[in-house]
Image 1 (cartoon, rainbow, N blue to C red):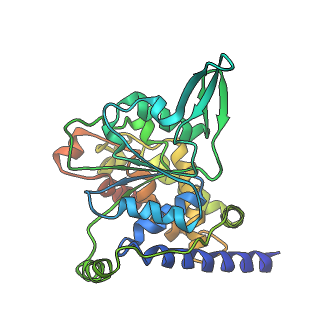
Image 2 (cartoon, rainbow, N blue to C red):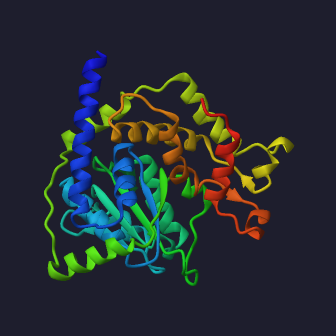
Length: 325
């Protein structure tokens, strides 16, 4: 039984590596973003990307859609956008004298919600409801969304005018928040030389719906020891404590991570182990994904802002306190 699991994990890991390389042919120097997108897709979650314009966020999700041969829709969120523009609406047909549902662009496999913080709360809520329930209600009827259904939302951290920041409760719907940084000098030089010569680099479709189910099954079969499970829970609980003995970081947190964070950290750790070709989760798997899973789930205090601490700084302090199994 274990031998069979090892073979499946090894095959799946090699398959994921080939997908990373295929996406990396077009998206250069953003390995963390590529891995995060694939991780969220396999873990049945959604991704919030934060980075300045021009760092290939849109290109990355379009390339991902091509690699898994899925329907893709890009939605530019603007202040005048309405929920009906996203999920659809009822249209009256004079011939039959009845209302019929006209489905919106959300009925696709992969959605890019570009600059999600530029649309008002009612539009954000319409999308986030679809993300959590994986269904949309139009009129009196409820329609299931296609499978797979993956949302990647982007937001620009340097512009605040004319934006509607996502509430903390809605941020919690994203399995992870990825920070997109500038590429290195070497990568940017490679981008210049490659993209400057060849404007469109074709990629091959590698992941079918059947193959995605196999990858998800392999991830779910990854073994997790009881001590590792306790380590995951202890990290999440540590973000909530207000005990004086944890004052080295607790004073910087107003609200800690939710139970959803526990489940997402568990799932992402298993997918990380799959990426590494292992049949079991180790503490390093948890440490490598905990920043992406937790950074948007903790509400920092005024004291943290006054000391210019980021969520990642506070997470680092938590990891130093929680004993590693």
